Length: 557
Image (cartoon, rainbow, N blue to C red; front, side, top):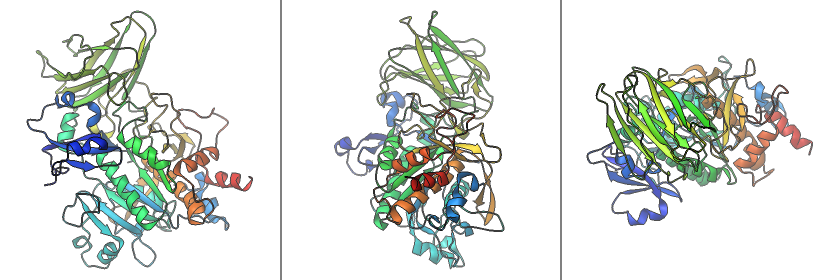
């Protein structure tokens, strides 16, 4: 078995420049020009393997970010304008997600042929592996059409989407119209590149104390999916829009990290755009912020732990120059005593009067950011209110953020009692150049309560823009239609608008050097901004996306 598939190996992110020093056999998987994966045996896997290896070397875990009014964002107006009539023709859209029901009418032309250019299914190992990759199966448009004409399509192209999230996102972005369902994707003439992600390795879930049953994906596979999409688009010489409708609450929320860096790079290239969801953590009570400016220089944080959460992690990120201690007390007031910051130390605490075990990594500086990170991992925690005291031993002012895991990696029973809804955008939504999309209810022009809020931990303005994201009509596996709500749906909607601009700029030859970042700034400039708010802000970004206003500004230049 390939090591990238083998649960007995960790996948550690390292610098590609260092890869040759490790490359014996299949120990290395190339990600991009900056990062690669080093596969090392888990051996007798231990939570303190995170400590022997840096926090930033373990891929973060991503959760899905969605469970239509096209007129709200000006799409219908532009498509009905004879001089524009932009439907995504000539543009490729990449969905890196849970797969696709390629047999659904939403992905077929009127003659019954597929609008999918290629599929890379990372979970199937029986087909042809894509060029420059070392696992999964690739299916071409020709193979998909052959399957569609077969009595048993799955015998030829055995890829499905049991979850349905990828099918929904793809259809919102570019699904073929269905008048009976009052449905159409934003750019129904674009063609698809589909990447079906394999689920995260159990060994990685174990490191982060994520339940085995939780559905999540590791960032290294998302990076590989993006690289596959870029390679495919280059082969066909077409502009490309990548949609990421998932997110992670791990990391410093400052736009750093392997995935953020790669999408940053791609968005600055001509002909490549990226749309990412802001996440659905705005009202989940999974973020806490403290700023202690006066004596006594400590803060007491209260965490309510539900009975269904038998294992989870929690991160505390402080700002320099403070170096904080952490003291954790159970509901029956059994305590770890203060844990001071160190290098490469992982401490294990087994409580005497309950079954709780806590691993504490108080990292004096995390390699990627240079900031202090306190990583807590709970096993069998006693349900109830836990008390966490952070203190600055130097008796100086300090501040910090703390986050719990995103999405289904934690139940709604576990949350901060004095939570803060701001700074809840999930990664890679904190990256600088990708378009980060919040979601609003297009029926009443109100932001969705769950929509992730900015700004980033470093103060950068995010989200960039908001798009419709409430009960958006979408395709559902099995030739059905349903609705999707959340920032994933909004990101798909915005990705379709990026594709419209690429069609005007590159396919029609109006501006061949157009980058994704250029389009983002144009969308920001043309956004609708209500007089009820000041802009930009950490909830709406620069306003509601409006492509018609964007093109009206073009004509008035």
